[in-house]
Image (cartoon, rainbow, N blue to C red; front, top):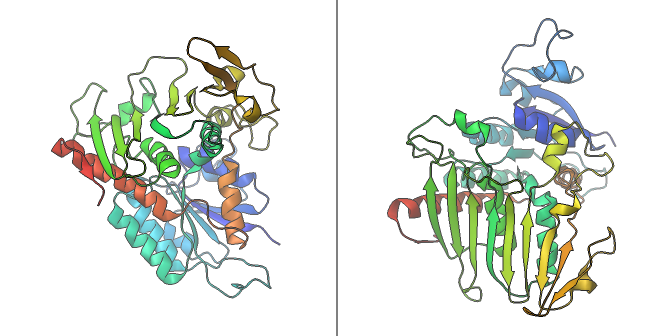
Length: 400
């Protein structure tokens, strides 16, 4: 069966680092075209790599408007990597375009029309926009998903596996961090007045909020604190804390989601999860991003694996030897008589962002349900809205 033809809107950092390497690594996907507003350079041989899609991908078609892409009969999967404020309009156009999906001849939906569509995070700027897209996709029987690639982070997959194994008992408190000390991109945050879609809650928070919702579900209430620590007066957050609280039977659970740009430490805290049976503390961030920057490919040997010194520390009331993976080799389990606890470095599952596109391809072929449902990403936007309301009211806000 011929590969699924992919059209990508936008040719910026996200496209080049987080989408192209993983789409290109999948045998069932083929990049057919890009939408990049800039005119192609006349001297492609002398142009700087990364400057234009025609320089890096001469085999793909180049369009300067989305209308040209939507008229291309070859395009079956549209990936939107443009600015956040265009996500809704481009997604709506793609859904209305009714791109043909591909199915085996004997598939039950072989004659169906299917607009396969991936939206970069954040999904939309508001839940109203998200609801509109979800409703349109359902009305037309079309597929819509969101690029929540950090569900395939190695550290998140490791934490999820520990929770699934009940290694921590009943979770009472969880901290999910994505801190970056003095990141260079804050210099581009020059706006003063906030509008939906701006700030780090919509940026890095789109990942960590999604992880919290996947692990623990919709909260009963939300409390938010938003700050600008980059040395300017602004309502646009670069630092935030969002607290999720739950109803019965999880009324004792407190989930804290944080991003802070004043955090001078080599390996940033990622997770601190406390349960009745143990705790898990993890530093560092998923290795895949730096590996892509270093020129590695998703199919390279060892891709997604991280060094042992970043393995999370599992502390348990019971000997965890039975749940420790046999490979790779781990540090031995130690016992502390004073606290009556065991501890061991728990090997991090190799990260696999390629898993997102593997699932998308399987869903298009009719072999699997979508791993990232748009309603889940819609709930992530709702958390930000309620956290903003909480911040402005200086009060905890119930989910509604």
